[in-house]
Amino acid sequence: MSSARYALCLGALLLSAGASAEPLLERAVARGVLNVCSGDEFPPFKFIGADNRPAGLIPDLIGDLHQQLSATLGQGLKLQLVQVNPVNRILFLQQGRCDLLVTSMLDTPARRRQVDFASPGFYSSAATVFAPKATPLADWQALRGKTLCAPATSVWVRPLEARYGVHFIAFNGSAEVRKAVADQRCLGALGDDVLYQALAASPGWQDYEVKLPGQDPAPWGIAVRQGQPALLKAVSAIVEGWHAEGLIVSLEQRYGLAPNPWVAAQHQRARQQVAAHD
Image (cartoon, rainbow, N blue to C red; front, top):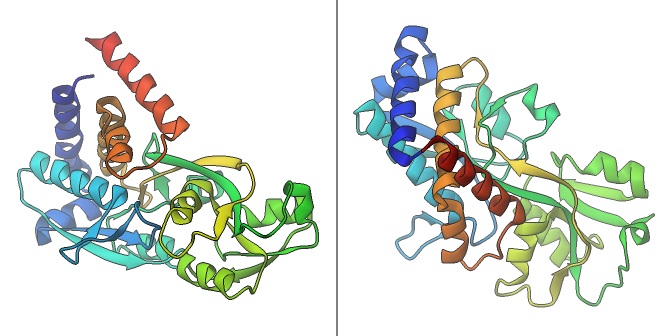
């Protein structure tokens, strides 16, 4: 499907929302504001730019999503970012404080019982351990009996507790996890491999590294409150367009990120679908 066809599809989906009376979309149009929940991420996925505004791969995708929805609705919606953390982000979405949730949150079966996710996802990561380079850690089995820091909402905590006998100290957000690691309150941090690979290349973290190969990979999904089928389909069409047009691949190159194999596979799949329909 070409970019023009994606736009036509998106327009049809959003126009149908008037008939289905979806409250979030109606409210966004009525107030002229699209509220998007966004959290703290590691650079270059998100950081504060020279103009003191959010920049990076995720803010760029939020900006494109906002522009496409505004253009299709024929109304210049103002973009309002709502700051969230891993503990309150799903609650904020369920309460209607934001219309969309765009973070590095993993799309998992358990979370799909709470919110809907646009399909496909837009990025992917796996569980790894981030620790000082001087910390010996040969493999995952070497974690048995050790203590790691992790976000309280991490979907990887319970599986790794059961699989390797790891102990965990839980924190509300990634900033608290990073501080605890720097303060040596734990052996290292459990988290997303792509995020910690980026952090390892950041100033101040040159003595740390990703220690282990990723496990239990999952996509990052844009979340929508349940009961909003037209909005969900519209966002899914936009994400599919990102993959088909190679937008995320281009953003990886812009920000110096290593190519994500899952993103590359999604790009190839979407391109093949475009070719099949043209």
